[in-house]
Length: 196
Figure (cartoon, helix red, strand yellow):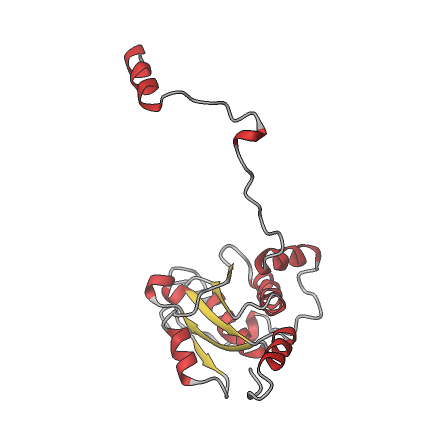
């Protein structure tokens, strides 16, 4: 940079103050207890093949194709609720990214993530698994997610995300209310039907 360019730069930027003093900036707080972070911490201290994880390994997983749409709804979930999930109308409160993970690591992550979401009263979450189109083993993680999620009673429904939210490489999940949240609703609405 020559002197003329430096002069132009100084004129454009103006006076600059040093950030070395703490009073000039504020630190952005980071929530260290989001479901995704809690799940990752738990997975880091657990052994990958932990016995409390009942989800099957890849050898038992029925395969889907990279461009297949994933879709599941338990009995009792209203059609309108499922349609809203399918269209991406519920805000995604937490997400899990399985890219770069093995099937064994993903298995631990998915189970921990779903349980942590329920514990944190998260009703809609997403799992990014990719399509696996150009892999040696196509759609492996996608197939696993499709097979594992219905096995978790906390999962009420799931559907591949709309194109603008990740499309066929992301799955939106509708989760059961935590017992704490159900109790709050029972106290607020004593005459209403039990909530799922």
